[in-house]
Image: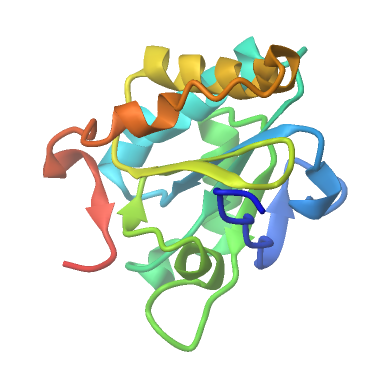
Length: 183
């Protein structure tokens, strides 16, 4: 039995930058960096999306899949699919982007299943499909790169558990750099 939870499947309404919808199950064997964002979130535009783009670029030859998850919990009318397509084009986002499916409540389905408090958020999923790290807010690029490298090399270390992820709690930036779903 693993000490890490199984990553919930992505429940989406649309996909951009990919010809086929991606699934957590279908990506087993690869490390996944799931970056949640909203177009109108200052922290997403300033930190989260540039970080996702850097990860996609610098780890493009590795077993890392970067997925953007547009998860709208406020300003619904302003963040429709056509607006998102224009946003993705303007910001030159080349990695796959999913649109989180709406729920009956305020929080979209995938965001709720992952227990995320807002945007930007980063979820790192290991090769076995387990959530190894989840964080709401900005995180230093060097630290994210270290965590991703750790997960990419994990099987090569004879499953040595350095417990790197327990050392990075409380690393978010000020509340002005993130949007919270629960005020």
